[in-house]
Image 1: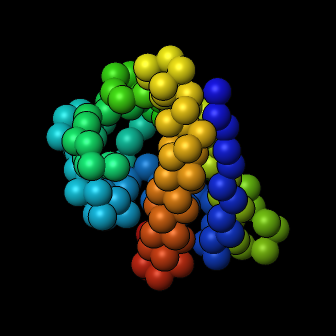
Image 2: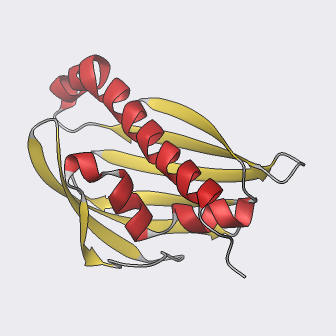
Length: 155
């Protein structure tokens, strides 16, 4: 099963980066290139433990829906989103937020996933999906970083 990690340094405190990372609107804006939108469950604002969202998007020329739920949550240290229904055989995305000791955050995304379709899915993982998914997470994280570093802190 493919696994990868993306680490992003954000000049904002962990609680701020954590909250922004759970915001449906921030996610939607970060995925504008794939026309991703929330179409079910929590469709605006922040997600909490046990809450779900259904996303609709077009990736690699294919339109799909995925419902994910927040299965673990410990603010501001980590949360996990997991696919309930959707295009993957398996999707587990752990988000970790650690202070760097100087007012900034080290944000780590650890993704475990598997494509459906047995051996054909394995070939797709090797040839396309690993690289594509890593790029999507980097794009998302750069947007989270920009929002966290430029928007005024909530009081």
